Length: 142
Image 1 (cartoon, rainbow, N blue to C red):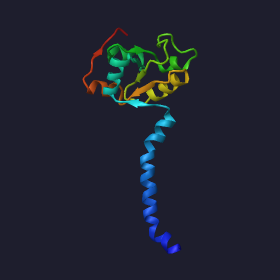
Image 2 (cartoon, rainbow, N blue to C red):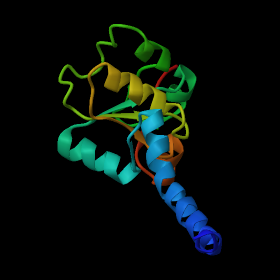
Image 3 (tube, rainbow, N blue to C red):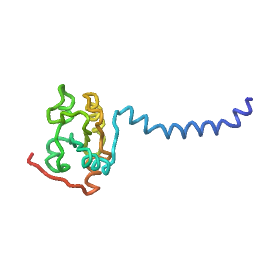
Image 4 (cartoon, rainbow, N blue to C red):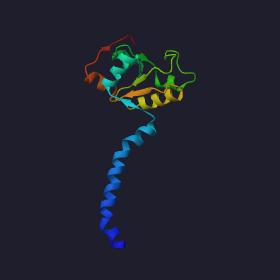
């Protein structure tokens, strides 16, 4: 029996390691509380389900260029209670959160879900991915 375990230890270790690598993204997403969507999926949600796009970057970054039609709400404002009134009243509407590269938006999406917006998602890659996909961007006064 011991010989069997020793002979197959490498195989067991390889199976456990590969299983861990397969589960890592799911565990990481669950910890962050974020459900990320691609830029193309975000556009589909905006067009078909009237998803609301929320930009959590600082005011200067938002003014310099943001996705057309997005609403600017700071991460700090999302941390406050009650949530800002600029969010949709219908909490079943998808809310898409965008930041520079998609890192801070997971915290914002988690705050939104905590506030009852179960369909809050982050956009993979943030505004960098939005620009790379050559989607419309507008500027506003700071």
